[in-house]
Length: 117
Image (cartoon, rainbow, N blue to C red; front, side, top):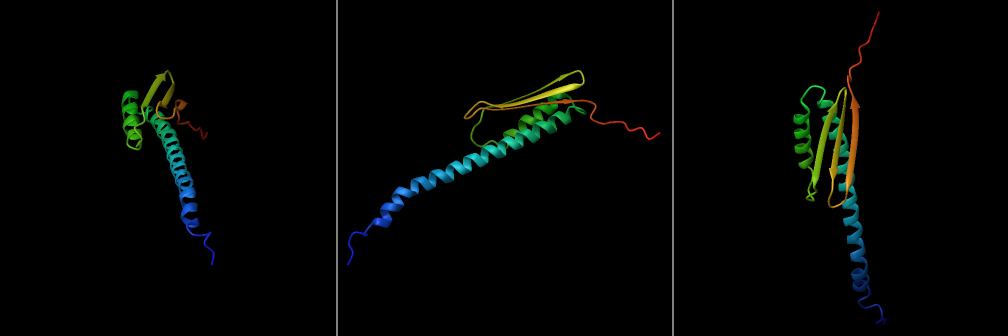
């Protein structure tokens, strides 16, 4: 009879479980961060297009509300749209817990007139 293996499975579980939990938490945090980044990038692009037909402040307010809906970690969000002549610039910034800055610029008119003749 072997008596040396008693409790070895429990000991291995106690040692491996924190690593497994840490890996899962890290994977979830990175997935959330990536989803937030791509959602903000897309939403900022849509807000810049919105300024072609609507007032900048209205598009900025809609962008702020749209992004706030997906933030679950209490991030400190700041958005800003500024228009200068035929171009508009947008900035979305998260200060905490990890800094994130996305900037985009777009020039108008977006619609190109085609001449068929």
